[in-house]
Image (cartoon, rainbow, N blue to C red; front, side, top):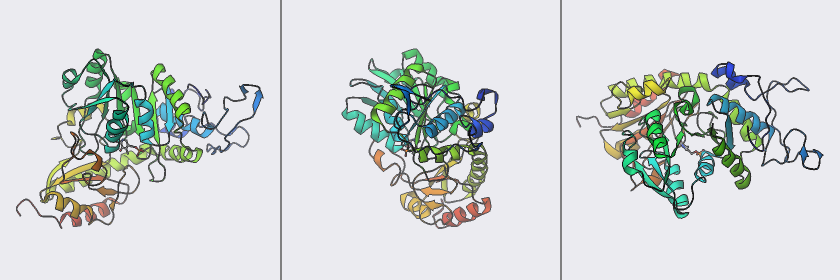
Length: 399
Ligand SMILES: *Cc1c(COP(=O)(O)O)cnc(C)c1O
């Protein structure tokens, strides 16, 4: 671990342990004085020094490094199979830190379906700073060659994507991009390291909105970047300190607490999503169901290869168009009408008007008959009854 947060092993040889064990123990030594099994929330903003310029345990100042943040960083880096991990104040702050490797005149390729805020950050903020952007259909990795220019430095993708659940072949995209001399960033927010490990498939950096599945309880906003690339790690530790978009110790504690149960939560998210998909497939108001676990999903074979499960996000389109989508999204009771995703409670939303309003009119525009579900951990029959009743209010194909 580089930089402000010191090299303290939380758990001897974490790599020899399984995912769930590392989620609970990596970076989280028992307190040497009390034996406390939970990493404390270290609120100190400054740390006493042994002599001038000699911090005792590597910590100097709270923006630069913090023990709670360090524990969290070691843990999530271990889960992604990375040597370096960096926590940020939000997913977009993490994205911003990564994008700062680009200089005015550089450009990047973005998968043509992505979180609206990521598009806005690249298009509006980095666009103003002279960074170019082209959206590419990454389901055909050779299109990267067609879109590549001498100024292209990076390919940025989500898989599965938000909100269309498109699956991109990480290994194939990395092969083409590396051949062209660029780096690949994979936003792993939807899959989480429990279901998909992009670094092992060749990605140069993995990004998370920890606000979603890592935190998992809708009570903390956070971001994370994991990488094995030492140069990128140098850039990130510098940016974390120089720009300062760091999470608070309490935020780190919450994200770390959530991460401990990531495996069991993802298993149940997937089971409940599977049941929801079966209901949607049967319902006459539903035009199509977008879920990588469906055998007829265009990316199903790739998903089977690069994911160990299909996750808890499900999108679907309705025969009744935008009016029906808004009607269904406003009619559920167990599924809460709200933005965000990845937490214990089920959420429903209309991406066109909510999470993805910022891509309207762009190459990333989403269909207006689309509804997105974040399937939570409630009782399966409650979820099915609720969604079924809401769908019954929408017109069927025959109408
Ligand atoms: C929410 C989200 C982000 C942005 O993260 P914040 O924590 O909201 O800043 C980035 N990527 C994906 C896929 C997301 O869902």
